[in-house]
Length: 495
Image (cartoon, rainbow, N blue to C red):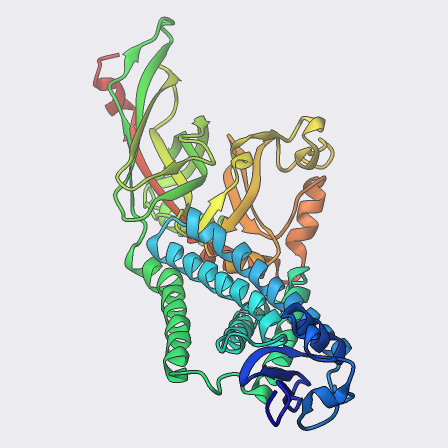
């Protein structure tokens, strides 16, 4: 043995860890005297050195009793760091997975993939926590933890900002706030310890983090702002009467009606409601030209509608002859897809109608903005009590009449919107006399009747919410109509 003992114990570092050197070679680090003994015994030095004799070991910066480690504090820090990082890791996968694998646009899939990648980085950071608050065998463990904390702060801040736009109470907001507070605490702790010191090219790592954040921001802006503007919805609709045919009953005539739609735009759409109606008009004529005065009265009847002004019409009564769904709520049209439906309108030959009008209306939402659950396509009947939330007692529904209702959950294709809002539902009603009505809102009509619906509609901000949600999901109405004089129709076949 030389002048100095074979074993040297260095002074404790900032975390209380002491390096153990044997013959100039580091053999380990220890938090305590007992841990140091385990390291040396495992290496076989207990046979040549009396580990219980402090004089057999050269102590620097303190004797055998100088072990400033605070194991309880270190374990608490590790526990809180792992809990927060793991929670953020799960949240990133929860948000990114649906967008990455079910997104209908490339930009949405990119955003989802970025969230999954950020989650993977946080998963690696979770493992790095044990090394950084342990023996720090990797110089990059501290930087990995720092990147994970920065990702958590950025994501939780973005989610809180999106939630603050509408400030709806959801369980997730507690998660966002907790992660935001945790990320601030973790960053303050890490910045004090300066984990980037001793790491080669720290600037390149910073550039990589900034580039990832910018890519995420650009992808979000593209998928939520630019793309909906650059790819508008365009549906081509037609409603055409065919050549009338004789009916088996000589008192009636069959008039074919062809309905057609084609998605000639660049975006696929869901159909949330549709209706075709054939109506006959009975007109009373006026030689005095008083018809120019009736347009004002007709215009006041329907909000947003401006009636036509005809000088020689005194009165115009409209009667529904035929009505029904054309394609059915819950269906969708892909880009370039077309659909035609032919039906027959049965009309008495001695009908007093002056004209016959066919109207086709389709209400859609953009398929690149939302996805509707399959349950929406199942009709509920208002007069059937077993239908639960859609049952409308006759005493309450005199002014509405019987109707068919459709209801289902709609999920935005940007999953960050889904987790920062209450669930949204698309609801549609159809009645052969009054046509269709539909809306998107946070109203959950479970076990509610029409009276409960009316109370929801009367709540403060209800109409504003429905308008906002319609714009968010790109809801739109497309319609066409065709009007023909009855005599012109019948003269086609000579009936």
